Every structure is written in C-alpha cells, then in structure tokens.
Image (cartoon, rainbow, N blue to C red):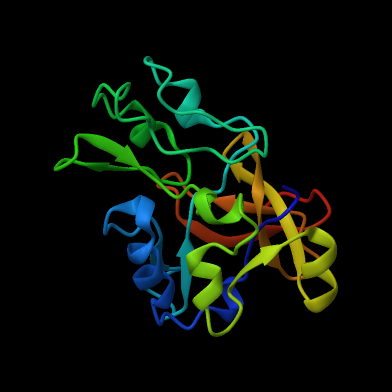
Length: 197
C-alpha cells in the first residue's frame, strides 16, 4: 500500500466530521481515534486534525514490553493487541505526538490504525472520506501533491530528536520540517533550509 494520509492544517475548519466518522468505524467500537486540536488557542481559533503519524520507527511499539503493538509491512502502526496488552501505558507516555489513548473501560491502548480494515481493501479511511475541505486526504504521493499548493513534509523535530513518519503534513512550500513542542503540540514553527527555528 503506497497510499498514506496527508494532513493540511490550513484547510481544517474544525467541523469535527472526521471525529464522528471515526467513531462509526467498526474496529473502533464507538470510540474516535482522531482528535481535532487548536493549534495555538492563545493566538488563533485555527484547528488541526490529530491522527497517528505512523512513525517509521514507532516509539510506542519499541517501548511495549509485551510486543502488543505491531507495525505491518505497509508501515501502518496498529493498535495494541488485546490479548497481549498489559495496561502499562508505556506507549501512551512514549508517543511524541500524544496520539495513543488508554481506554480504561476496555483495558486497552487504542489509536488510529489508518482504518486498516478499509484501506487494505482499497477504501479510504473514514476520516478522509468525510472531510469537506480536504484537510485530511488519502492517496499516493503522486496523486495528492500535484493537487496542492503546499509541500508534504514528514520530518518532525522534537528538541534534538527527528522523527520521520508515513503520514505527511502539508506546509508552506519553503518548509523542510515541523517543530513540535514538548507536549506533542504543533507549534507552527517551520525550519527553512536547515536554519534553526
């Protein structure tokens, strides 16, 4: 599967259609695995959908002592396997994007799995299929990039650590990476041509 998700924060209108659609996905058991966050509430009402970024080297899977979190051959990082999950929440604390959530009713870590039950069958993820503005898009790099005036970036910087992801963030064309603050929140700082942020 060469298709992946593309997030364009500039297109998000905060309607939360993606959240409602995610709840309807049969594998999520009525829980939404996507969140709509304010980029910087002190300065703007701009919002951005937050999904699992499907890291190339997923920290959540690396810190799981029970090997309950798997990354499949397509690079999609799956939710914890119920029989193996120990309720330790290491994955919740380790994710630099703050994505995995612990479901206390189910005693299980849950997160976006890019609707793998749908995408493996050639369908779009629920969130991308209902997004009215295209803030969430699903397709190949070759399909999506020519349709946008923004640049796909999958390098995220957390202090001195850089994380590459399967999911792309659409940013201004002069951006090379995204800087994220210590809480996993997009700061809106963009490094240009390797210059310090």
